[in-house]
Length: 446
Image 1 (tube, rainbow, N blue to C red):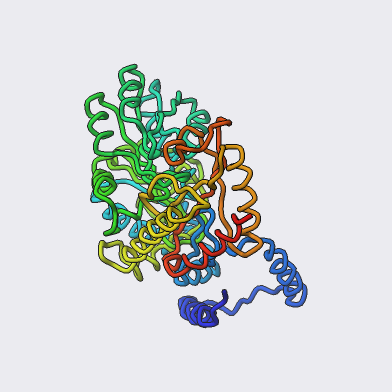
Image 2: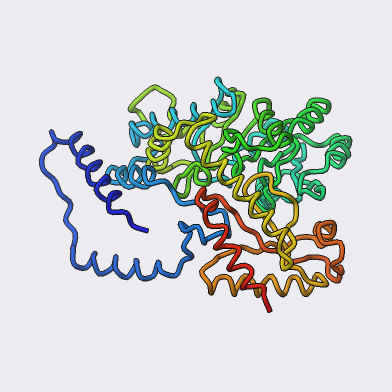
């Protein structure tokens, strides 16, 4: 878990940072070393009550360990603790954030745009829907039934009407239902999910964009989870077409703290039309006077934001440029291939029923039982037994009708079914599938 080389790199980075302040009079804040050490030991012990999120045997929720360069850069910057709300609170880190945003936008084919980092995807989606509401104040937001629940909740917070769109048997929004809602005349924005968090499904963006153009509505792409997969070379044809369509949406949310190898929390919102920045204007009496240049606080609903996030992201993007065929793209391909191999192996087992083939790196599977209630109960048992053997999974509650086509012989005696879900977002998962399957087989055997 702990690589001593990381500590040496942090020490070296801090020494280089200190050189920038050599001209100041000596000043070292005092603290009680012994009491601090005792508290830290207690904290470390309390932290034992966590799953081993960094380990390949953690194949549950979407928790990806940050790359060492991100950890070190983030920690190093805390000795300055910049605030990216205003230029005089984070001069260097604000400049780094702007460079990061340009590179993220280029990944989607955008040059002239507006964007900034956020505390995560929730706040980023809040800002995207806030702009949508300002542009179409009396219009409805529509998103997939399998979209993240924050869209309906955010719409409620913003006082916007919201409707959920039915999904097909692969978890993608049904185009016919979208068109039906659009014909109602009160839709302002369609949210297309680029990898929903439950199933990993990618909505059919080219067709959605065509519908949006026909009915003059906006399209917001929630790519919080799957945004980086546009760099991957192993996407299926339909999924590739969806990512290629991102250049034409109105706004995009992406979370670098997922596949961008960053610590929590680091989200990002991007707007294709920079003119939406006028909605953010404020007349604060304590405006920051260090520069006449636009500061990031003027285009963000958040005020104080950790400059450390920008420092860590910039360092990571220097090490892993956001280009197709690069190292980051290769690691994403390994995740895609691991998920497909895992889905294939589950299909060869008589103990599990894999659902839709994965578009990204999320695999959902039921336990093979005669009926839905029994399958749900057995899934919960497998979840617990696997954890005892150090394999950590996740569970998801799905409509039983969604599972029926994948398990046609299973009796539907309940409306919902508890399934197991694995997010294979570590490239190392490729090499751990034998161990994962062995534990799964043991956990499901009577």
